[in-house]
Image (cartoon, rainbow, N blue to C red; front, side):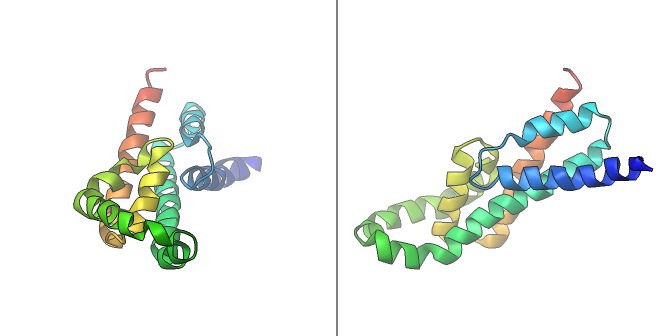
Length: 147
């Protein structure tokens, strides 16, 4: 009877942890993925749920910067607008790499914010963020087998 609750609700919990950990909250989603693998949950479901949630969280950070840039900068950082042009050019030139590297702890959130501020293509951003997140969780799941 409780098997249903254990299996299905657990993936919802994993989703929320992975989503929140890819926003500006410092959570270690990798630890939860390792625990789920060790508890013999389906690794394909774990990979899908954690990658999707983590990508969605990074895209949320990206969207906040993408849609909030002009209001925030004009109100609080008017003197920094000239400096932003150099940063925007850097993010537009290497945006695919920054998007892929959003899986990195601490600086990944900054990359997602920078991509949004630079108004880098949402489609490219989403694709490369997803590739980075999937790659990370594939590595975590594979390495869990060796622990």
